[in-house]
Image (tube, rainbow, N blue to C red):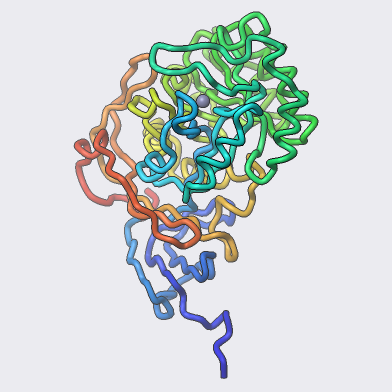
Length: 404
Ligand SMILES: [Zn+2]
């Protein structure tokens, strides 16, 4: 009798880890088995049929991490970093570029970066024709100050031709990035997003326009990125409470994304919002050529920072896996259900005395860090890199196979 697919040996089994899969409501110590690059089973005692069995007891088994705000149009845009480097270091499987490219230079991103990278890369296309072209150490030139630099028809046409990789429209709004055009740039970006029926990701910077005015224009499913930026122009009012316009936006389905970067995470804002019971929907790094050297570093560091702010581990994992997958309308990734691509990130939570810092120099004593153990994309084991900025501050090995 020939062996049916259901009876085949598993290619890979990860045994004994704490599986955190928000989409499927799983938080339990289980084995995860893979066949032909897809999740084949999640359960107990699966190792008996495994050809490659890895004991991950005491570790966290999560869907592959998804960083929904990165800049990885490497070497063609001055702000971008190497997608391979950042994925290896942060144990990430999917990178979403947040508008590094516009309609005028997206083809190079696709042909010279995306197609050569083993990691999954998607993009928000910048409404600005040249994308983010003038951002580097000591250089900052706004890409959304001129109406004729934001041709809606060109953005729409480029998206229509590349719907496999482009998952939304990006615009940067605020201060010198938009100049006198202000909310006019947001109107043009919304016009493009409406035409292609995709989400808009909006950066919020210094005023004008105000945080309240920007968030009030967003539609259900749109993403406000840099949600916990420091004052002035933060999510909090003078009373220290979350602005009513921000609450109203969440009520209608607008998503709030961390996007730490070099200027967009302030402890005063984050702690005020969390105390007011306003959690982010999404955790991301906004990793770019400056933020990669701290205090944002990357997605994994930002996750550790939010964990030390008091968010639960299941929330932190969900905000970096299932929720970004749904936000970019890629429901096939970001979970560990049977049949899903076997994108898996294995982490350990360790004790640490790391002192975290926000973008305005405020510091907080941390107690714990997330560290990479192993990463798989479609069942294939990926290389990991060291985290020299964190490793000296690790006090113990694994501490957290179970909730506590
Ligand atoms: Zn960014």
